[in-house]
Length: 280
Length: 300
Image (cartoon, rainbow over all chains, first blue to last red; front, side, top):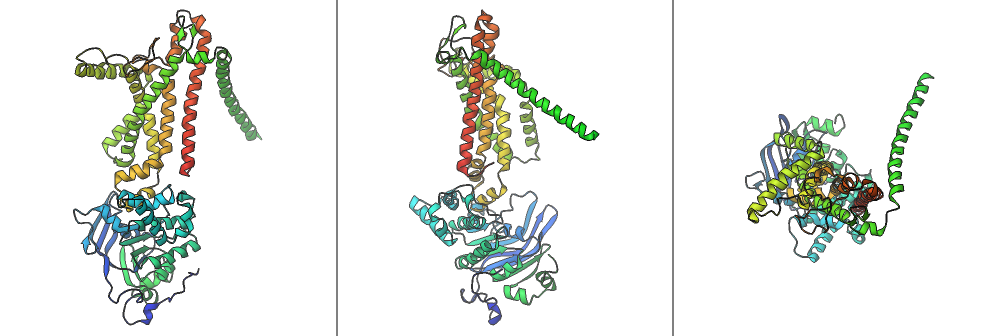
């Protein structure tokens, strides 16, 4: 499968300094969000074990690993989507701009506004495209006037590279769109509330190759404005889109490195075994 | 060979059973239509009974039935939705509170309707109505008597389990992914319920309403003691007025009239109207639901 984006595959290998995608970011990496010694339990099951990962601003960090390795659990812990699951318990710290998101008094609602999420299955509401994108703005009361709403919806749809396709049918039900378009509506919906971090839980795994390529292309655009964390068990995808990659295995962080390095010269033999397809 | 023979016998038996059901339906509907058609006229539908129920129409009974069902729906649907939301969205399914209330609702559905009638008399008329009279009317008899308010409330209690069960099932069927998406956008739980979950369960709400209406329009026993009248010269205009009702009117015509033979033609037509009305109410609800599905773009 090819990605219709001409691009240097391994820019890191050619630079001395470890600045992934050096072209687009300032020399120093700044950490937007960070997991510090995270332990997650479901009842007695120790799903994530002592994992620490930094998520750098305006970069894409991929979390890879076989099914059940805890990667989705970790991702969902970052906007506290697991809170309602019975038996769920987390230890350690998740920092957003240096603030612990589990601290007492933290407003989960505003946390989720700052840390948006796109899910594995495209899950637009059975409402119009417009109402889908406007949903987050409405529930958070972020918009005063109809004109401002129109403007924010348009900007979100443009950011999701969907505006030109749907501008004439904004009142159509979002479920009538194709799977790839639906997923981009979901991305637009997440972007509309202008989050700082965008969590993507296998955003392309339910899509065909063409739609997948479009989503990946979109991610390159989005990282100019957002910090992106993507969970995937498609290693090629991680290699194509991300700047840093974390490899998780049975709840443990095996390796965290710049993506080109992790996929060419992994530090850990288990990483090598996984990326060369010996298990998983 | 033998098994194929047995198979054929079985299929024929099943077919025969189906034919019996169809025959019964045709016999009932056919008989009623055949005997009831002659007396059916605009006058019959729009006039009051006269001459000791042997002449005139049944308009007060039609009016009473529609009003009763309407009031009942106003009471039962919001209450049923609230309980269903609690069951589906808030209650911990392992808690004793959930298990006991759940069992109570299921059992409520199995209580014979005459018991609801007695309950209505004891609770609504005597207790609530008596209390209202004591508090607001200085003990003057105002609400402590059979009335359309108590009739519709009793009917609402009777149909409550139907609404709860139907709405709860559709609420549970709303995909978790919709809830996740809503929460991930910073919506609160109540925003998620009212903007995402409930709109997606509209078909269940309407189904519950339809079932309640068709049950409520046909039941007689629950309103025997709490408001149904033998004959009224005026239509009910206040909540504490009594009312005539089609099902009860059928009972009256067939057993209580001074001249049962003379009321027979009217009886048939009344039954016909009762069936037609129930059917019509169902049809309207089904049409609304179909329309809603169409605009929502999703079939369920």
